[in-house]
Amino acid sequence: MREIKFRAWDITNKQMFQVHSLGSKWSSEESLMYGDGRFPIMQYTGLHDKNGKEIWEGDIVHTFSRVGRGFRDRGVDKVHYSDITARWYPLDIVVTEMCEVIGDIYSNPELVKEVK
Image 1 (tube, rainbow, N blue to C red):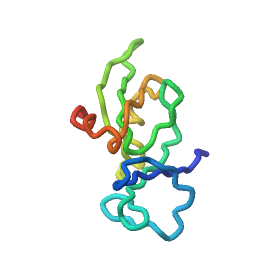
Image 2 (image 1 turned 90 degrees about the vertical axis):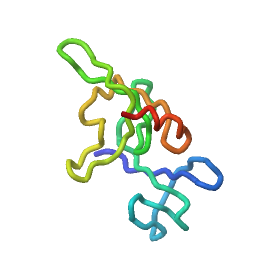
Image 3 (image 1 turned 30 degrees about the horizontal axis):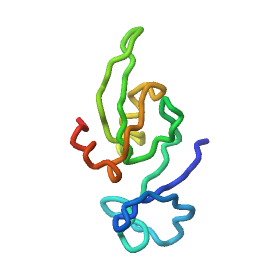
């Protein structure tokens, strides 16, 4: 069973922090928001990249897929959960041991432009 963890981005202070308990302070709309609505919440996927770094919802990852005996560079993508397939995209279709977290959508908004 995977570990369930959350983190949040403080929009005002522009920093990421661990959320130890959601309690009753969260609301679900377009995205999960904590407290007074200035803290978007991200969930841990339970996976690690090639450097052992935890992969979280909202991370920007450089991905590869297996092709025959080799690998194909899939480029840069944003990690998100698909309610339709009940899976973390693109992590369900790539070789996670080859992917690398290069940032996240809040700390590194310039990387979002590279997402395909």
